[in-house]
Image (cartoon, rainbow, N blue to C red; front, side, top):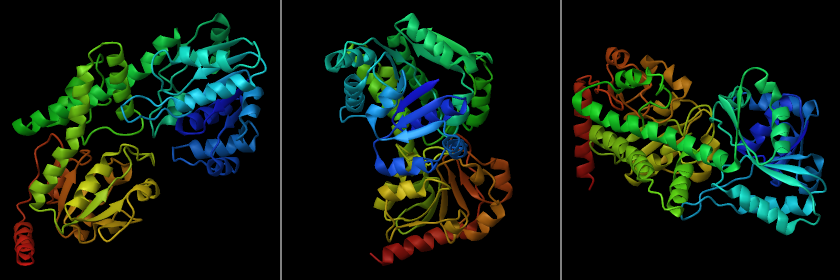
Length: 460
């Protein structure tokens, strides 16, 4: 099939690449000239496992084409995926200006029947607004359908999730649109993937409802982690017991410093706003937000409690992206943590396998912040190690080398990546989330802290 994807951001690029890889011919419209230059060379502007290799392959085999000309993309095919951004506005609503702009451009350039598919995350009944806009601006009286096909891609697993979906949700208003989807997704339904056909409004709600439910699970387990710390129970044991219930599942029951990224924070706010506009009380989601925001405060309290004073301490930070296997730093907990540590006059040594370049754009290097190219280099003479993202290479770190490089063997783990028993045998002071602390009773550590504080007092 011939397919057009409008927008080569995270969702659009993954959609275009994967649809091309299953045998379709795809043209992707992207207005950013810098991004377009990279894409036409087969280079992905974002990091996502397998995406680069798949992109290069399909560009080389001429199944995937990139252009900045909207008219070319619209006239190329009868199936148009709208994958432009819907960022959060100042009042918490989804900013729909890009969707509106694309709708006008489709209306002005369409020359035959089009199936126009919302792939972006949009508020309920956006399909009605797209339809109204196209009817207003259309230069010809042509038939078209609006459909909703929300994405459920996890960053770090996006290519895998697209090619191996749990289910495919499609909202349609006509049998013609339904039949086109059945043909498009036949490679998936032939191997048993469930294609769920709904109305447009239902598909729009399913996307927000799914992300909101995942956010609730994360905040719920973090709330339980606070209780577990106070009664000396390991949160992982509790999570394993809860998650063994197949009605609940173990995924998204990992205690930590909270959720971030481009979806959950934005979608929670937008869903609350949508509900309020219809007079529905979504206080459950408001509490979910509150719990998540408080995770950073509690993590910083752990740092301060164990360093006594943060001022002038040299702190290593492992992890800048909001989750592993992505370079995405949108709404990452590390951003607030690092800014507040800078305000507290700490010296920070930062390392991330993929997100450093993106993070530098928001937090430039200065006399308090240094970016390192090696995780061990960041540890040299550090008074503490903070773990904010659970990258695999951190889990596999040589703890003997970690201890040898640090000034003080203190780890504050915001993702519970280490086994406390292993840490105990290595004689670290180790503080994690929802688990008993591991204390080494290291006399040198306490003597160092006292001397450091005495020195600070003398310099005032």
